[in-house]
Length: 373
Image 1: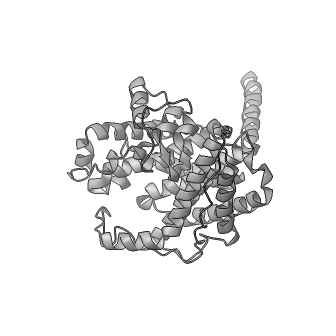
Image 2: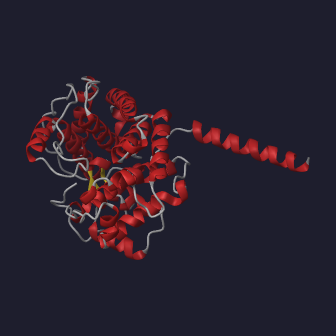
Image 3: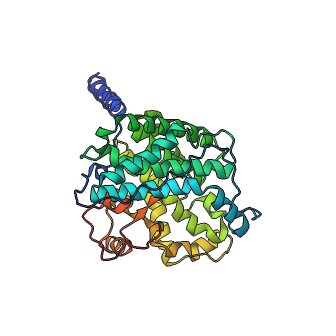
């Protein structure tokens, strides 16, 4: 009886703690609370808002005509894809740049322009078409992650830059919630053999939108998708559905890490520790990728004896996941030095200046001018 009496309060305490965590307002990692830097000067003229994309989300794939590995680029279809999706990519990149400039220089013109762009897309209900193909729904979730990820820096900054723009913020956040709901519908209930990096990027989009709008349903769905992803990581740190990409298997393992790291970092900020999932799957995956960059032979062997295409892995921005990784794990001094040499990382698909968010004291010796994101 004594054991029962002692266990009951512990159980009740755990339940109350779980309910308290679940009821609390959703928050991002602490780097998103950074104040806006105050500097002099005027912002450049606000560019014309990219035409809100309200049409059907049906685009050609850049791998059109490829075999099952989906690893051979079709230059003609890629050109068609780039042309048709140009407004979406323009608002993703442009909004991220304006938010980054505003946070660094504090010029109201950058803020007003950024909000005007998002507000125009929100008012027109952009990216909400229910007519789409796989490439189209992929663009929707990438765009949501980019835009909501950058918006979080404005919403949670201790400088409260959105306080003067309540109506625009309300419309934008309502739009994020609608797009987020559609992203969840797009990527839910996939069979395991079809659950790959796209689902992980959808999880990041839902997480960013969920925190931006305090939507627990979006947050919970993102965490659920992380559980699925972690469950796919085998004991050696491989993802079976990325191994199917044959010569690009290593590149796609690396591409899977940014959204998974961001979801884990945001979950951690809200009292949910995902690092232990499937016996530490996220850390195991990261370690395997880092080892593969040094020696890709194990990936070649597991991907059908295909020599690995290392071109993507020569771009530093592809390793922007190292910032949330080193915030979640105790990175070695050697890896931190390597991160500093490669950074600072600016990746518009993760909301912009990832280094400033996760490692604001890092002073990289390298310029960001001309670095691709």
